[in-house]
Length: 401
Image (cartoon, rainbow, N blue to C red; front, side, top):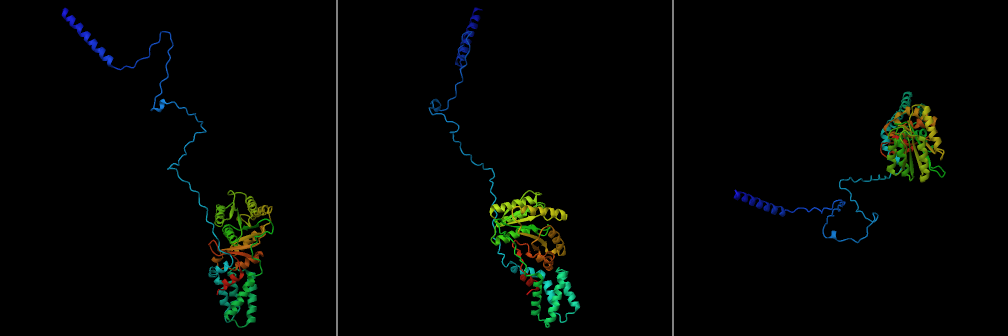
């Protein structure tokens, strides 16, 4: 019994000794020494981690302020889109206006030969009886020459044919050319007035019904003036037709002419006023003002155009008021001409689409109606197809070669 107890005691001692060795071999984190009871505990700040040898080397360099720190330049992101400046429109050089109508004569003669050749054919008949003279009258009336001018021409032709007696083709052509020139008129001053005679630019106002090519004509007129060496400012005072200002500015940009414009539906008189003001400030030679072409009521048209005219003349007098008419409208164009002539003092006429009609007699009719000359004619859709009107070239195109 005693031997068993002794063995148990020895086993316990051995196990305890082995346990002590195991515990002692473990690395335990030593706890800070306990302060005596009643003393406050002070926790030391954690030690900052050290990186390399420099961390243990104190720095004696002075600290820099934020203003002294140079930040690296930001490099453009590869994904950011590069915004390119729009390229300036290339300035075009319009072709010279001198002799332009002669160069466009073939285009004009194709549409007008029915009038000239028809008259020559009738006058070449061996016997010019009353039926033949009536046919001559009908030919002239169909070409929109007008009743009174037609009667005058027929009377003069009858008298000259009677006196002439024999009628060779060359004699008839010469006779008809002379009479048509008299009818069209060679004594009109057809130059577009663009010189004010003052220190201000020449001011030209363009009027007409929308659809006649009014805004396009204003842009082409700018090209005519630039081709003749004049500097131009455009006033987009047609604020009631969508995109009219954009259309006019496009024409101006092509020849380097500045365009003054305002908001759509804005006051036309205000824009016209600003255009003239800018023209004076820029030292421009000419200011072209494109006006609205509404014909809802004559009263509204009169008020609007009258206001534009009054406001513009606060800067300088108007030098030219050009009425744009579509030659293909014939007698309807004369009705429009009468309305505009009652509103403003028309000083010149621009006939567009003259190459697209055989009714060249509208030149005579509209001059008789208004008492003012045709100064420009449009003979196509090209940028330089607006030509100064030349009676001789026009009549030559009528009767052909």
